[in-house]
Length: 397
Image (tube, rainbow, N blue to C red):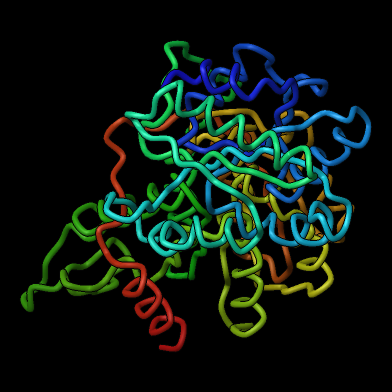
């Protein structure tokens, strides 16, 4: 279905959401039509934030707003739906457009599988009537459903359109850029160099995929020499087996967007003898920014928190975050991080990474990054459970 057909059928003039690759057609349409316009379209920090903003729009205008998200965001809306929107409280009508990742019978990444299984059940449990839109859904079907939905909306209830893979199409396109010169994959390569054998916790999306592929390349690039026992010796005379699990150093936060730094905090507190590196992203850090003052208050001296800031939700399409106009390093200092800095070139990055690695105190480094990744970027080939077990074994070795 063409996204404009859905937009015209819904007939709302206010949209707020968190971008999703399954909803790329909708996101591109909204960016081409409104851009970021507080009167019509706002990309919010997280899905609960969207619900609050949309509720305020309804209170001010009496109109019905639309909130869009990936189905992973359902967890973030449960509280405001149940305690704010519900007809036992304020009876605030709202339309949700939800990208259905992990739809049963459709291949997807492991972090989406269970979420996909419970997507419709969660909506039903929240009292949200839903309708699924797939490749073959017709305009007449959507119009008929919307007519039924209008009755529920008029009663202060909420409804949802659940979008299957390929369910929405759009001919328009949006190009995103920011003028920064460094690439995320090369930034992570520099982090890996300076972190050495220290544990790394990496954030959701392409950052973890790039870290995994960098480790894969280390199997052949890092240890070029063999000894008589078929072990490989690096330039520092550190002998390791060809079969060593090079991924054991990393915990890939493949789901749970925004919680990477909290996971790193939990590890750092309980492994004070190890330097812990956290590779975060601007969209993820923004989603649950309340973690930063908690980290600062706990003050783990062995934690290096690196926020790669390209001002975009790049993994799901490149839509902008508000962090292109703000400074994470200043926010970190205000939260109580004793050391925080910002870099925009590789020379400065290397300097700050070396200092942070040798510093016995909590540190944040904001790294300004360009938008984009190579087209042949792969995905982790190990299971999430294997990743957890190997990482835990390494932490406790």
